[in-house]
Image 1 (cartoon, protein in one colour):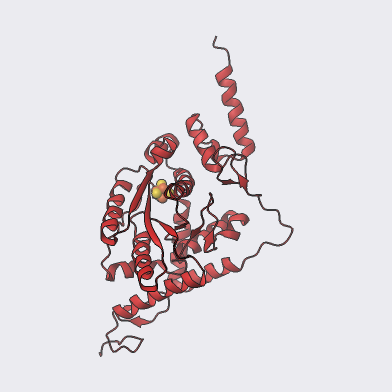
Image 2 (cartoon, rainbow, N blue to C red):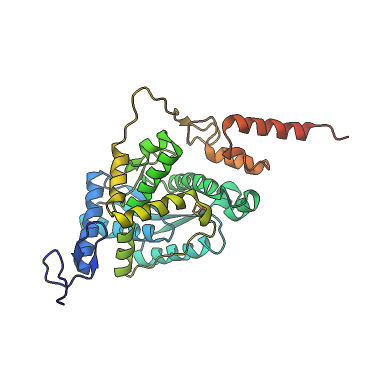
Length: 335
Ligand code: SF4
């Protein structure tokens, strides 16, 4: 059988079939299709301004490794005029994050981008290992996700960054749309597909890989021989997101465009006029964005510090009850 030639008529042999379009491409044409798409996303989404300091949220995984590599390449190729810095959050998960941070340190050397690492331990006084010891392995990802979002904002503020850049890809966003539908979380559903969001502090966040399929990120990293860390977090199996991911992968097998279809559906959803959404204010303790007097991160931390780890997981009325009971126990006379 004659070899399949590259769909772009460059005369080379095709070495892969793009999961996103089904096109058979040679390596070089795949690289250029991939990079041009990310560049178009950046330009059409008006993600950066010349002279900005962009903090790349770097975990050492495939998404942030490819993001750092491609952003540096496009910044040089198209003269975006960005200053880049890697920002890593060390959640304190032994046997996982310590190893993945070694990969980020390697990225720093390979791409010549400076690196800043901030730990949960230094910011909150708790590592994820200590949190899991307290709360078990059911809601650990709630603590981890809430703390990480805020930690990134705090790190970006320390670095005086103008924008935080994350490696969220099309699969991640489609999963988030599904999760928000399943939870009936209209407020999050409304903003989860935005390419630039306000962040929880004052520094915006953007997602240049928003329209990039996860499978193509893996292929790009593989053919470019990029070093990334691929072991799953030891606390991951219980994450709710894992179920949405498994469902999405099943859909993708039957219909590869399902990822983009869900993402586009999420983009087109609009909340009917008159529907009440939680008002966004600022946390009275840390000044980060919050719809409650105390933001989620401060509430979770308060619970951990008071020995009531479930405090931040409960509805506000239940949380008040828990605090009241705890107060009664502490103030009860010791007979
Ligand atoms: Fe944190 Fe959960 Fe992700 Fe592990 S799987 S890094 S605990 S959010």
